[in-house]
Length: 400
Ligand code: LMR
Image (cartoon, rainbow, N blue to C red; front, side, top):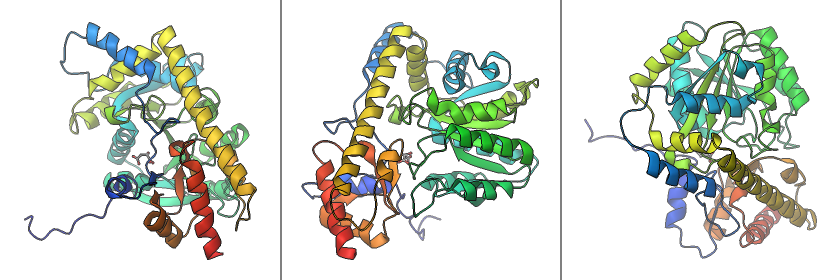
């Protein structure tokens, strides 16, 4: 059975890291995968996480199974983080949360669950979107369609085109929306634009599925919630996949959550029980460690403060890099305008690079970026950003 298999192509994002590790270029830079690096080029364990782990080590008395949906305290703390403890949806009984293996796990659990319900099995994703979205939804049996999002000329959101696209989505279809730090484009909606999207969801009857993997890395924990709150306020049903990979640096602990919102006044208990069945036949119950860390940090005032400071530090380092890079490019002759890099939010910017530019950066300069020119700004450091900027200009000016 296994003798004549055709190997799968490398993953468009994680495959780059494998190739990067083999590269011998002395100045090589991996701007592929979305992993934060500090000014020294390290991906540190946050202090708040270390301290929480110490507490857990002392207090944990068992390694017995977690509940299928994870710890209820974790669920409550996640909901409070997503929309604010004083939001009526949080205080009321509209939301249920499951602890999942990462944000990807949350997307897949949500997709599997929706696929088991009667209704249209089509999801609309932004053009462009994260390379893995299509795979996750197709694996769950969905057909994937696209709505316009980033304008390739301005690198900003083409909001008019986006709304025109969302107007045409049939009721019952699923629409995947990035809440902040859009991956790969870096271009986000304003709070006013979220209000428009929420009204559209309500009027048209499509189901929002929010991907919220970067809370706190856009404008801050609270402003980054604008999309979640606008849709909750509109009273629509929705799903939210959230992640602690980036904002807690818990990448390898696979810590995420799936939250489902029912309409105000309706009981989400049936949804929760059905979601538990989806989990039970897949991985049975979640891995505990990352969830315990998040629960310990969010549930303790001092650790939470420390975490927020560390998160603010990550966000402002990324923003500083954006400004430096943009200023460098603006001061030199370039075949293009790069002001958008400083206006983007989160880890990524999509530079719209041709395949041969991406290939030359890799072959000649040891610089790895995702196809289309997505760069992880969070991997630029004081030691490597100028080399990246100069190499980029070299290749672009050759082409021009
Ligand atoms: C990314 O987009 O680089 C991250 O979300 C990591 C991943 O799993 O692709």
